Length: 270
Image 1: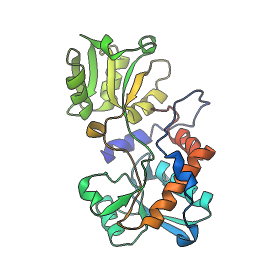
Image 2: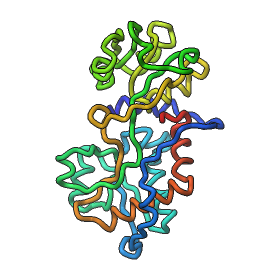
Image 3: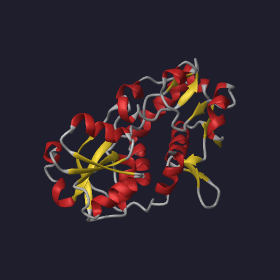
Image 4: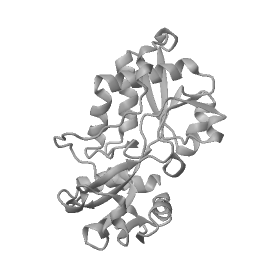
């Protein structure tokens, strides 16, 4: 998955003016009212990885960049906390956190029962929904029921393909080896709609203006598409977790979170 995401990072382009885009809102607004003891957390050592674009990766100059990296730094700057962000290999990052070689891991660690036994997690700050993409003319007033008997392009073996099998059994699945191949089939008229990971589709749409659009609403299904992204901290590190939750709420309230989101995802996938 991480190797596939690297290709999508190459599609990142400067954000054009965007109007009326739906934005993430997973932050508990009440968290900003619970002011933790910042004196108890004078600094946060964030751990991440360098192989998960566009969230955390190295640019062509070797600098560690990405949405997660910018979010961690923005949080620390807003709270006037000293912040470091250090990259670890993916297969060592969680163990480094467990060994207290860092205070928090912001790298997309899955919220599984196994990880929950080892770590505590902040509130979710971003989810990755599934979405339909259709030609522009078909996007207005789109209803999934309109795909009865139509061709829906999906990535082979994906949970998005399973979603269509479960909930739109009368649609005709056309399966491809990658999301890009499925979306390209839509642009060529070989499919009537695409269903898949909305984040990946957003980068493709940014490169195919005038062809296609997101259609209908985003689908948030933790059982199929994952729980979303949260910051992991060592079990029992309540002071750090509370400061991170408080900081995330402040960034959302100020608009700084939305600015970061649209900087990295110029076509919102919400």
